[in-house]
Amino acid sequence: MTFTKIIMKKLLLISLSAIIFSCTTQVKEELNAVNNEAAFNKNVQTFMDFTKAFGEEDIDGVMNLFADSALWSPPEYNSYEWLSKDELKVALTNYMNAFDNLKFTPGINLPGGNLVDGFWGGSRYRSDGDENTSSLSSSNPNNIRVYGTWSSTHTESGKETYSKWYAIVNFNDSGKIVRFNDWFNVDGLQVQINQ
Image 1 (spheres, rainbow, N blue to C red):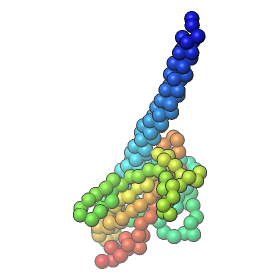
Image 2 (cartoon, rainbow, N blue to C red; image 1 turned 180 degrees about the horizontal axis):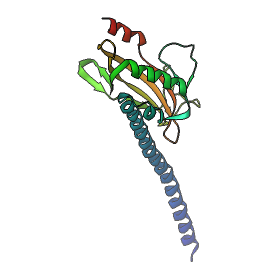
Image 3 (cartoon, rainbow, N blue to C red; image 1 turned 90 degrees about the vertical axis):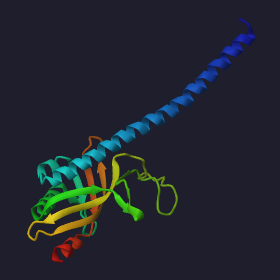
Image 4 (cartoon, rainbow, N blue to C red; image 1 turned 60 degrees about the vertical axis):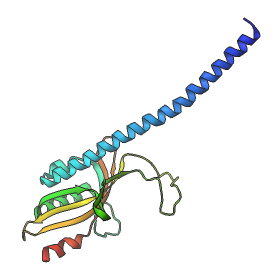
C-alpha cells in the first residue's frame, strides 16, 4: 500500500467520523424534541383527565392524578404559602359541593373571534427580553401553562357562572401533578351569583 493510499484512507476515516458525530448531535436533538412533545401531550391529556374527573365530581379520580407530595398555590392571595394535597382536596370538594355542571374549555379568546390553544410548555424567555439561561429555564415538557374558561352552575341559586382561568402545572417523570398554581377572580363568582 502506498503512502498516498494510507493518507487517503485516514482522511476518509476522519471525514466519516466527523460526519457521524455531527449527525449524532442533530439526531439526539431531534429525538429529544420528539420525546419532549410526547411527554407534553401526555401531560396535557392528564390535565384534561383532571377536568373530566372534576366535572364528574369524582374527587378520588381527581386526587389520583396528583403525587402524594403535591403542593398547591390557591387562586386567592395567601402570602404565597404552598398548601398540601389534603388542603387542595378539601377546597376542590367544597367547590364540587357548591357548583354543578363543572366544565373547562381550554383556549384564549383573542379579538376577531380567534381562539388559540390553551396549553403551553417551557420557560425559555423572560419579560426583560433576554433569553432565560438560569437553571429554572427549560423547554421541559413537564412544566405547562394552561389557559381557559371554567363554567358551572351555582347549586343553591341555579345561576350560571364563568371564570377566565390560568394555571401553571408541574408534572413529575411519572406523569403525576407535583405543583399546581391557579389564578382566577374568586370574588367574580360571588358577583355573578348575586346578579
